[in-house]
Length: 101
Image (cartoon, rainbow, N blue to C red; front, side, top):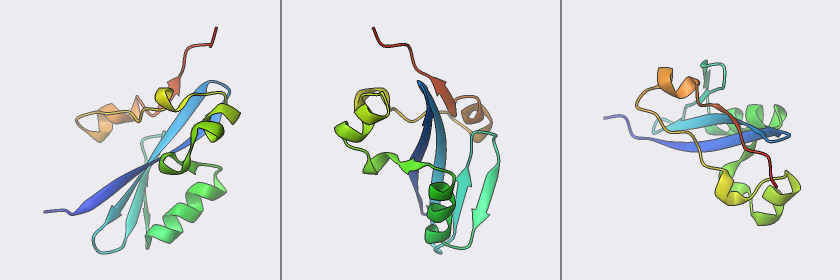
């Protein structure tokens, strides 16, 4: 069995959220599934996180209400996409949130 855990990361542009899934494997390697549907392998969790931060992504777990508000969102709006498989997930990795009224 593959013992891996997933973390969700995001970047924002206006009311558009671009998601990335960081999957950390028990062996210490990691991979990032990005909005283009590519799975990028990394030799360590730290290397994968550094690559995400270089691309201006932030960890969903690290965002509080104030951070979300600074980006023009509420935390309740930031829900990672869910799908049965990566092929289906790819189409959900970019979310356009409705305009605020």
